[in-house]
Image (cartoon, rainbow, N blue to C red):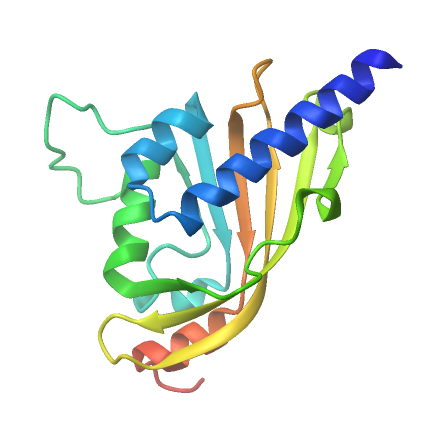
Length: 172
């Protein structure tokens, strides 16, 4: 039982630090190096029809770019690519209470074998191209943690329709 509580506390603390990295505008490479395992995955869920305007949606990015070489791979599939595609499309603007207190995180230290943490958050986003902005609630689901509490898989559920409209996508 003590191990379960210790693991819950570790995951809660590590998730809080992970969320703080976004509030502090840490560079993506630092966030990946500090908070993720050596084989990270990022999935931002969304409809496949939206990927023409929101290329970071609806697929899983995995691994890291080789830091010694620039990538010529046009498929943009690494976690580094996720952050690049996201930053070229949308900007993130935290509000006063973007992330709840860590006591409000939903933590199951045994789910999936290594624990799962869910966080419901709120922020303002804007289209880089048009400047149109909106506020929304979104969910982070962190899982596949290593023994030190680094994230193996980060999943995001947000409002792709608001993003689609802000970047100038036609209505379906």
